Length: 403
Image (cartoon, rainbow, N blue to C red; front, side, top):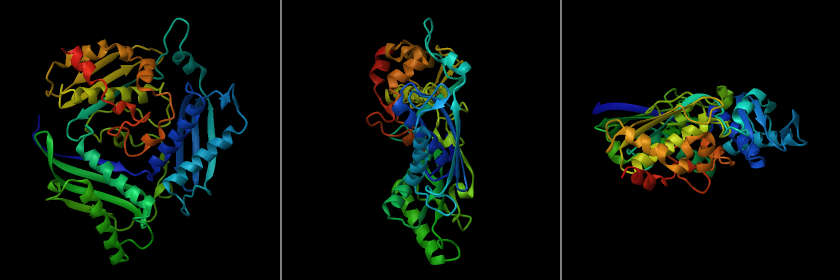
């Protein structure tokens, strides 16, 4: 195991074009789940200059049944899309919540997929697709997330809050961040580089040095508030390194659902099975199984069984029982990884990790997904129905199972 190295993670803001797409897709998921907890949704979003397009497959009581839209349903979908764009803050010539063109190409779910997923008289509900999913936790931060990603998210969250509140009126919605940390042993000791590129109001660029300096000073102040001073002693800063970032968002670059899967998960510190989350109801194990593996890995670390943990699970479409469960504590475990695997599978309330058991245990058939679609699905605070996979209520069960 390397003991001295540099590692980097990035984040993107809620106004990044791909994140706009993710938030719209999850707003549609929440809309349908609010009307039918058993709704099936696979909603993809495309954003570009003054255009939003939805495509995908749905089944939802009271909204889309037997190949027909319910009265007013399509109008409610459009209203939800425009409200999402407005909340993010887009009122620009190239992308405006009120002026953009909206196209809805959602249609009914394939009957062949439905017959594999739906529970029948003699079978449990099957997984919505085949695939492999990973969960991860590390003791680098209080939320048990990689520090590089944690700080990248926090920088942009703070900037978005300041933009919405009016503290930083020169900021526009699109932004990216990147943090490089030097590690000694398993813990970060210095931030060697921080990159922030933020869309800005006209004039806050290289053509007006005073305004450019104001923007740079603001961003450095945010970084100093987010990253502990002890880590900033040898930091190189790159703030809007191209010199100007006035045109941004979907007007500057097209956005698609599911193109920020590493930002959404662990910043590259853990493997990824390849499946995106946003726009999918929780029968899709791309989403629900990624949530349960994070939940399991986080509880393993919180229980003191390891300081770092990766968990993989695999499914076949239409099959309820997982094909495999794999635990790797990266030589930091206090017990054997195989014993942790056995303990997880033996905890009754986890129900053998079938798709239905996962949704029931975590309470996933609810409209809780739009908040996940910016600043990461993991490392967030579990409050009420939101982010239930961040709960630490399995610690005692794991300790009891492992003696």
